[in-house]
Amino acid sequence: MRTTARTRDGDAEALTTVRLGLFGGTFDPPHVGHLLAASDAYEALHLDRVVFIPAASQPLKQGDVAASTSERLAMLRQLVGDDARFTVDPIEIDRGGLSYTVDTLDAYAARHPASERFLLIGEDLAAQIATWHQADRIATLAQVIVLTRGLDADVSSGYGDHDASPSTRERPAVPLVRIATRRVDVSSSEIRGRVRAGLSLRGFVTEAVADYIRAATLYR
Image (cartoon, rainbow, N blue to C red; front, side):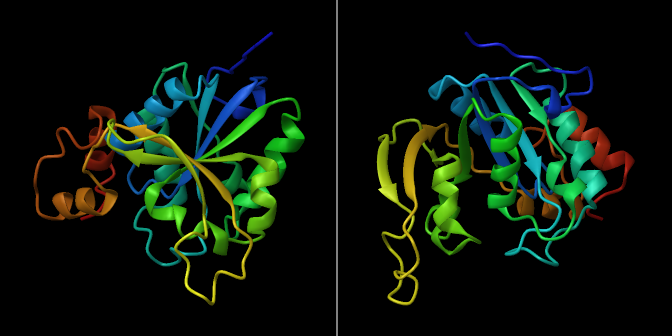
């Protein structure tokens, strides 16, 4: 039997769900593409909850983040709002330091040992995942799901090292499953550029996130 629980402020500690989608990233800022991809994954995988997990400091993006951890966390909470399908967990921000996916998955395995865990990543990360910290353990802690843009894409399985160079082929391959998500050509870097140019964010982020960006004068 599936049971779910959630505190008023979306505390992921209160989750007792069976099928969890774990969606990490810098979310600088979070946008409609993130929201729609999470929605498609929720439906395709029959998830009980998708958990957005903002990174404190991604090893591959050090120095590239414009908004603070508290600002990115606040924007994610604005993005999710009161949608019962989603929640936000500051586990990596609270932990501090470099945000290694394997550490987060370890924590979720300890919190929810009976749950099925699905790590949701973008297509751009599929070829990199075999180089991540303790990549060989990632597949033992969660099934890795690649969110492939384009609803007409085929669902397929593969390995995170299939196109790797000779120097990286020695790293352990990580089993991947691709699911199709709707194609939304929007990126956080484009949104930051639009803010600097004084252009509208309508259609790129939710109204609540746009209001937060304006009020906090982010990305100027």
